[in-house]
Picture 1 (tube, helix red, strand yellow):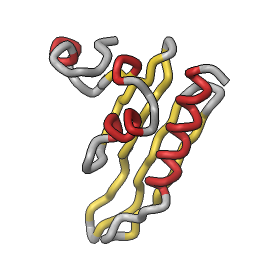
Picture 2 (picture 1 turned 90 degrees about the vertical axis):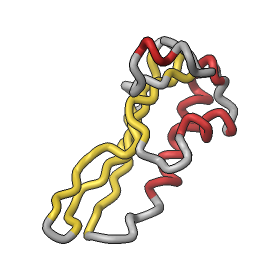
Picture 3 (picture 1 turned 135 degrees about the vertical axis):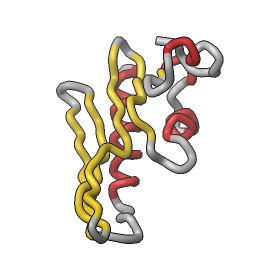
Picture 4 (picture 1 turned 60 degrees about the vertical axis):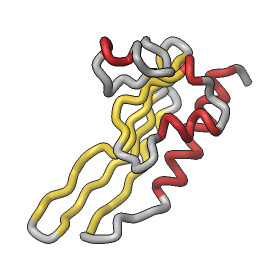
Amino acid sequence: MGNVGQYRVIIRRLIQEYAQSKPSHGDIQVEAILDEANDHYELMYSGWSGYYRIHGSVIHIDIRDDKVWIQQDGTEDGIANELVKAGIPRDRIVLAFKDPELRKHTDFAVA
């Protein structure tokens, strides 16, 4: 298994771990989307919290050109740090949710 194969295993495991935790309030469904054929991984919340509709991506990660692109990170501690702890090098992780000009000031990949 090459680097991308290892990235898939790590991302899938982290998404599945997050999917085990249900929000503490509201009637919220947690959905893990693991599309390895297209290297698209997402954790979605949908449901209701009182009168408020909840629907959105909590975590959205894609693998493109042998890099891990974090499109959305709604985690408390930052999914990028968890990916690094799990073995993905910082220079292979793109914080896609940040402006491209700001990315160069991080210790992660620019693109």
